[in-house]
Image (cartoon, rainbow, N blue to C red; front, side, top):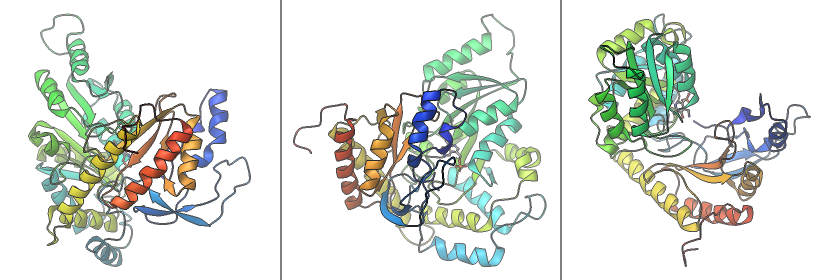
Amino acid sequence: STNGLQGYAPICLGLEDFYVRRLYLRIQDCFGRPIASAPDAWIDVVERYSNDYNKTLKRTTKTTRCLNLGSYNYLGFAASDEYCTPRVIDSLNEYSASTCSSRVDGGTTVLHTELEESVARFVGKPAAIVLGMGYVTNSAILPVLIGKKGLIVSDSLNHNSIVKGSQGSGATVRVFQNNSPSHLEEVLREQITKGQPRTHRPWKKIIVVVEGIYSMEGELCKLPEIIAVCKKYKAYVYLDEAHSIGAVGKTGKGVCELLGVDTADVDIMMGTFTKSFGSCGGYIASSKEVIQYLKYACPAHLYGTSISPPAAQQILSAIKVILGEDGSSRGAQKLAQIRENSNFFRSELIKMGFEVLGDNDSPVMPIMLYNPAKIPAFSRMCLKQNVAIVTVAFPATPLLLARARICISAAHTKEDLTRALEVISRVGDLVGVKYFPAEPNKE
Ligand code: PMP
């Protein structure tokens, strides 16, 4: 469940701008650095590393132990767990690492059927389908849900998998400003009336696609307001909870629980298992009819190999822990811990004078660097002081909105976070990215 240590790797490929290319060639060590351990609170990072394939690869196996502020290991399940790991090992012995088959051939084990029931129950929908990859879940399901005569209205900061799925569907795609219900309404009104009064709608189907927590902004979706607009214009709601399921809400049920939204108002609930559950794969949860249809119509389900059984077992076990069905209160503790850690870290960064994006309770907190030239100094200085931070740049963000994107985990201790704050504060002073005055007497 990690993006590699630092950043979104292939940013230098295909860029037209000569100077941007040159800049990225010089900071390649800040992206895709290998790690040699599980993506837990602390990781072993390969020390000398160059990503420049034009030169002789400078890689050593020597590693250094770093505090990990980069992985989406929100609940700490990406490490050895007293409940999950023995069960995952048993499933590996029993089923092997792969089913070597698609779901409709021999690739459905009892773990897969149990997983779909468990996920549906967990997210509060009648049925669910699971696929081997979160990215594929969006990119393969959207084209099955909607086609040429349909309209997709997509948030401007939706993940690339949603963008590709929307493009692949053949539907007309319109974008609304990030998390703006009023602009969504404007776009829907414009698209439905097309400037003229009509007796019936020009679209066979309209799907509005949003995310629970925006992964580059750390902000929570304004879901209640968005749902109200969708109801008014009779559009379906598709919610990607990759970063919110398991991570927010009193019992980990995501943004619906956090914001008091009835899951019946969200038509399609999508999520991934690569973050809070410490596994891999993705799901769609919806009505029985929709899931039945997807199971017979989605090519990734029909022709792609099913999710690996140990990965399925990891998710099943993690859900049990979150729900307290393992007989302990560890799930509730993890949820309380991630909330406490996230809110503590965010407020301390703000007090120091950093510009931090996102909302309270969100474990994703980008620190704005703005100038991409600040990436290497920030990234390297943190790494030198044993703090591993993901930096994000163009094209994952606009060119001049580079940022360091911190992901907090329930596995971080207060000491870990305090130490990280000290390092980030020092580096922030040196690199010059504290854009606001620090709160007096707090540093
Ligand atoms: N949706 C969103 C919002 C994401 O951030 C990601 C990846 N981080 C995905 C989908 C794809 O999920 P996965 O990495 O599990 O393939």
